[in-house]
Length: 408
Image (cartoon, rainbow, N blue to C red; front, side):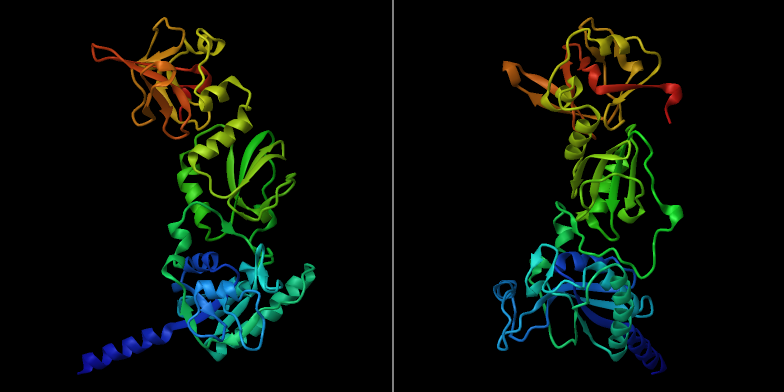
């Protein structure tokens, strides 16, 4: 009996630690993903709150997004956050909410226009209500000092919350192509980056990737592209507020935003997730130039002339490896090189796992194309002989050479 009572008490205690609060800060996909990654949050669910008609759906919410009558009060796209108040306080979540969007915009967030995108907080406890008013006053002062207008966020006690359709739940997790909408004002309760954290231009060519907290596409770009990159052009991932002395033309309206910089000046910029193929084509435009021989070989399946200058430069280099000109990934070893008298660099094999082979029936021939696995650029062709040996016929203009003694 004592054990049963103890278990009941523990259950009551755990249950009492859970709180619910509902936030609306524009499209619920991004808001849900953001809070879903906050430590102490047990669940974040997309749905509808703040309206007065029964059983709202995505279609009805869109239907009434320009409606403002006494009879019909539309719902706003909302996220129900269930959290453990022993791990994170409501005040912290509310501060995150203020910083996450622009609460001075009425019936919109960025390019999303309509009352279904209005800013709102729906509280469930009196303590939450007090924290909302307290933090609102604090944030209003910060916004006013920065030139923003009045906060127009709807603040009400939660009445009903309707879960959104299944296809809206965890939408950004299941749809990796895109970017995280960035509707924040950039005004923070506490400054994250100090003067010591400021990022200045390195001089010469470099790549700057702008990130935001809890951005799934930033994380995916880091994993899919940056973690595999070994190229000679530096890449740095930073918050936009950390940049100093850069001359940029493209506004950051989503993350990741990838800047290609030459001597502090923006050359090109891209917003949103880029896969390896798209990133390395953008890098090739930046590093090689669209009209270059290397670019034509890499992306148009071009072929260099026999006994070209780059071939002459590489044919007798000392012990080392040949790497992808863009990604820096090791592709071929001098130990596997031989002179085929063809006028192109020849190897018995590629470094294990560094290349992919595809059928190539262009020009009426049956050949096997060789591409770099990481950057997906065209390298050349491989030919199989009857004796079981192979000859990788590779364009020197898409390679760089590293001495073995310099390999890190």
